[in-house]
Amino acid sequence: MQETQISLRFEPPPQHDLFYFALRPDGPAADAAVELARQCRRHNGLSGRPYDANRLHVSLCPAMSRRGPRKGDIATALRAAARVRVHGFDIGFDRLCAFGRGERRAIVLRCSSGASPASSLRRNLIRELVRSGLWWGRGKFTPHLTLLWDRSPVPEICLDAPICWTVRDFVLVRSLVGCSRHIDLGRWPLALPPM
Image 1 (spheres, rainbow, N blue to C red):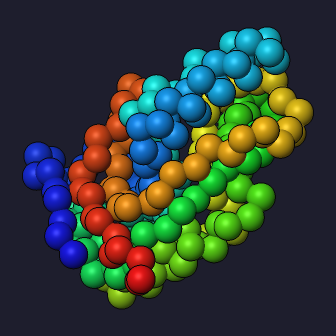
Image 2: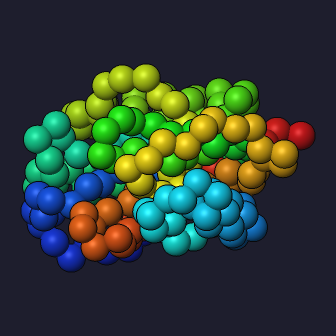
């Protein structure tokens, strides 16, 4: 498994940035998700700005300690990710709904079924992060693709055609909080499915 990685130019990382592993949709799936976000915004009278295609992702797990990134966390996470061995898989999102309450709600796409390969990848990644001494978070994993944030809820709907892609890799993302910008720090290809 070959690893592509961008060199890190900071140590320790800024405390306000977030670091996490994620799946990125391919081009057609990202374009379909952006268009769906625009339609949802118009139809529901939302004011939140839809994510650009290059910010869309399915979060897997954090890559830093509980109190934020410490010196060495990112290099450790890069090494842990390189040890993950999982086959590529298909994923599809067929439900639109809102997460959260109050002033800030995530408008997301969710899977009705077929999320187990993503859960398996996450378990394998967490196992390697724990072996490396990184905190990996708590809670239930609900694969979702955030389209935008807004104050207003949206009714849950099933899509006529799911947004699908074949997951061929996963990435380590640095999210520059407040800048609406993500930087991929590493990318790891998944193995081809067995014949």
